[in-house]
Image (cartoon, rainbow, N blue to C red; front, top):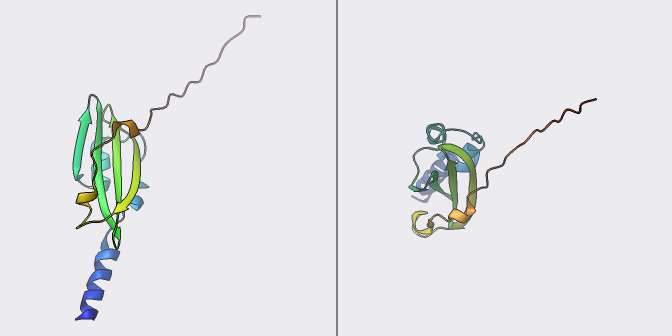
Length: 118
């Protein structure tokens, strides 16, 4: 019986695709549909104005969970944030309300050239 449980545990752990590995396929500017096609449906969704947060979690080992938020502004991926926390009866209880102060700040790249008259 112990062997069966051990094999089942190994199969469950190795069969799960890591959020961190999947997040490596994400790029800023992706649409929500593209992100969901890579990460799957989120466990929670929050929005405020033109910003949206999709929350994901996964068991990361005995007693630990990985939590990730995909942040969108104007329907485009702005960035992701990750944290690790304790697992109590799965990851759901460790989920937190979205802290909008953590939303990545958009960057603005300017390329200014000036011409001098001679």
